[in-house]
Image (cartoon, rainbow, N blue to C red):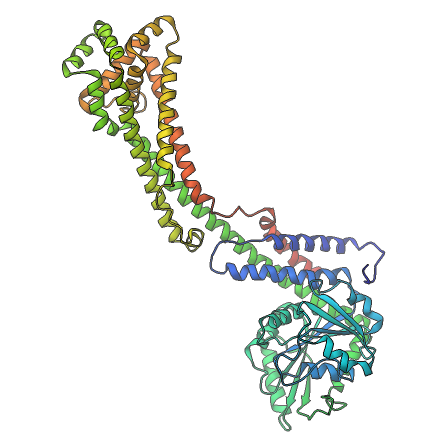
Length: 589
């Protein structure tokens, strides 16, 4: 059961609307994937994850509890004296300080005992487990060794209730921002992002280090209140060093930050600074803790700054999402275009007479007979119908050979063009960073295993459908007698020849192809079914063939398209509008 304080009143409408927006933003950012390997994508994914964490750790909890105590995070570089400073502020050792780095092995949150319910639950930093302890001064040294031991998980937050901490402000001793431990650095950043107030500790010889200043600049963008502690300043150097640091702070927009100088002083036997070394800082914190209005202003200032910074983050992530969508669309378009062009080339090959050469031509000529037969047939198709029908019925093998030759030739064209499309797509994708990532070491530049067999099966199915078309068209008694006299295979072969000889839609024939053999098929079919019926059958056969070729190629291009990530969802589409809404919220909250 949670120990958090409960507010039994309903939130104000504006606060409820703000929370609804923030929840939507949080859920949307949690769903952002950005899977393609584009420049900046990794950083955008990190920004999205960090934004979700900050929403959970600070922004949402603070909006829900504007009157909660301020959380002051003590952060800084390795060896800056953070733990020693915290010990001095409460007047006795509560955190480990020493020469071994990192000394802050666990984040320790010190709070007034009366305000324990604000921190013992999951109100802030809900991803960190709680290790609780209300320690008397005499117990602290031994307890400190236990709770900050190496065995304690870095996913835990140590809670210490101490009456020396003024009500209204809690102190959190964070790991070093430049720690040698990756986990410590990440945790330090997470804790600083959850702070209402930063107490930033640096030293006289390290105050210009890059890592601390990167975090201070982040504080400036968030408009967070920062108190700077300049520690270990050599005697006589206070004015020079503090003036230089103040100039740096002014330059970066942090000129209003209060600064506290702690001279270099020997520690006593307990590792404590002399009494009075941190008097100014402690007085400042005590006064802030006692000023409810001042605390509220600090909380709202930091909250508004965090929401404003979140708006910029969301806008950048939205831009990254748009770039992902554009890249995916471009890769998809490359694949679709390559296979569309392949389909066009296949259809061109089936209507320009190219398939009527070579083996197909030889088998067709074997089937219909000699040149004398052509001339006689052209003079009087009806006169030789009986002779032709007998030839068809007595010699079924040549018709089958024509079908087989057409199947082989058409299969070769389809497989070759599918391979060309695959090679083109593979090359285009490998020229794109996201495409290279999606392909990896796989070679997709040829046809898929079994594609040639599937193509042959589809062609045979087309030929069977063409035969059925002839049967359907010849259902009338008179027509049936005619096509039965010629034979279904012979008429089917003739129709295939007509289909493959069209160069101008359904109205023209390439007369010169193969010595006029296409004319023979045309005349033969017209003698049986009539001119309109032949045109209709040829059109249906071509449409059927085109559809089957397209299905084959569609199946092939899936090996590329299936590697593309799913399109961005509603959440990603909503990010730009949410960024604008957050900017408005930051200006009015």
